[in-house]
Amino acid sequence: MKTEIFYSTKESLNFGLKEIKQQLDNSFKEFDFLIFSFHPKYDYNDVIYFVNRIFKTDRWVGFHAIDAFANDVVVEGVVLLAIKFENSGKIHTFEIEDIEEKDSLQKTADYLNQNKDKLNIIIAGLCEHKFGFFVENLSKLLNYTPTKNIVGGLSSGYKKDGEILTYIFTPDKVIKNGFVVLSFDSVEFEIGISLGFKPYGITYEVKNAQGYKVFTVDDNKNFSYIIQSILKGIENPSIEYLWYCPIVILDDTEGYVATVRTPKELGKDYVEFFGPVKTGQKFKFSFGEKDELLFEDRESTLKVKSSIKHPDILFNFSCIARQYVLEEEGIKENQIYINTLNANLFGFFTFGEIGPDKFYKSLKFYNETSLLLAMREL
Amino acid sequence: MREKIKITLLKNLLEEVTKKYDYFISQRERVLEETYKMSITDELTQLYNRHYALEQLKREVERVKREENPFTLVMFDLDNFKPINDKYGHIKGDEVLKNVGNILKKSFRSYDLVARLGGDEFIAIIFEKEKSDVEKRLQKIREEIENIIPQENLSVSYGILQIPDDIKDILEKLEEDSDSIIKEILNKVDFIMYTNKKKRKGML
Image (cartoon, rainbow over all chains, first blue to last red; front, top):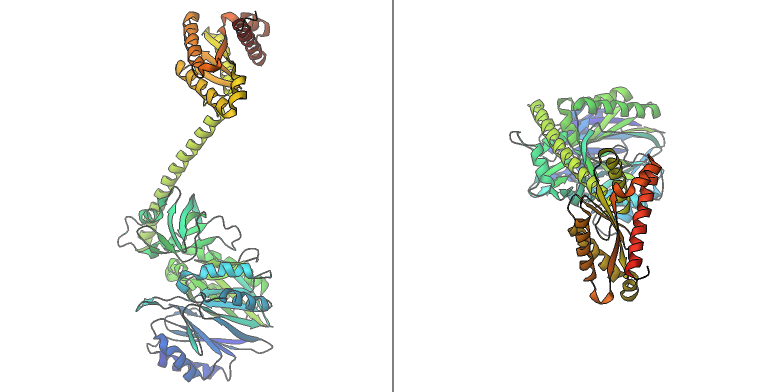
């Protein structure tokens, strides 16, 4: 499989895509598939029109990402991964426009059950903070193990004119509340999930949680007060500061790594996370330092390397909160992956990661992890 | 800038964890206390239970051997309780036992010990020196118990042992064997109580 990554940071989507097309033409006589990431600064209504017109193909998908990786460059613009299979490799797509539509869960499960021999990469929108539950429910409908062949991440974006721009793009539609599955045929692959946050302290019990929000813990203590006390003494406190100390859910024994939940919003009487937290779950606070996170990245890469020595392409689905904690060394994560595995790397900042549990028995929705996928065409 | 924020976060986390730990410890102490209380309490009457009463009796006997610190042991057994149980059922019977428990509890001082041995049998370790004072108090207890269900002739018989005076023979015979001493003391006070019961019923 021949892969290459191109990018542009031009402010105009039209000019940016034209710049990338020129780079693509210089490297590829023909291609099989294109995967784009688009910064939400671009008008999403223009995306399909420009891609179709400039690239003259319907073999592509795209998604929003605040930052995307073109090897060891973090790009706030457009990034393209171009793929040309050289042997029997193939790629086809499956999409769900709205996860709340009737049968969307069953349709997805049927598709994945029929494609259990393929590598399936899910790229999803934020879906009004419901995708974590969708993943958990989907996991229950899968009729095979190991479920190692399903990985992915949630597109990242921001709120603009009342819309949270975490959309998925295909040649004929903008998917606002759904996802796309990229199914790779005739490839071998390995995944590594790294965390690096060390839990400490005493255990809390969630007394009242709804969706992604936790209201009370222990003997009905307002969890928001506890979080506020952790931010005290900090000038202009921001929710992002809490990304250094996410909660680690303890009774989730099947996690590939511990299931971490990153705070997203601090309300008067609730704390909202980037993933589901349920009443009755137990958790501890954790703390992460960049060196510890990078150490786990190294460990994870070595594990991947022991299984797939010469990958054609690497994907890094790296949580936006993790990148925040890595600070100026964020790019080192990609450098570790690229230097150890010696392949091109494509990826993006995610609002959540999808991967298997420790025993490959179910799918999990993760936060603050880096999910590395190494792939090689057979 | 970020380093300063991280240090503050860590300090605050540590403070929160310490606070939480204090809470955890106090909760644990409360649970331990409640568990201990449950382990020494008779569930029905909320008096001490048999196990605790016999442990305390053993302790007091050990002390009396060392310090000559006398006390009075009283064993109670209700009269005509079984007919109440048969006639009104166990719920009423339990209610009567609770009433007896309350009467016994309020009739002694906080440093005396009252326990339910089982069924309709109770025991009291009383730190009262004068036998006549004890008897006056026991007489009052009997009157109150007889008023629980006046029409059913409920009453109480008791046996009294003044320790160490009344158990010198046992202490001499068994010396250091605490378990056997307690067994013998219980047999003796039980015998006195039954003798009294028979006397009251005109059988002796």
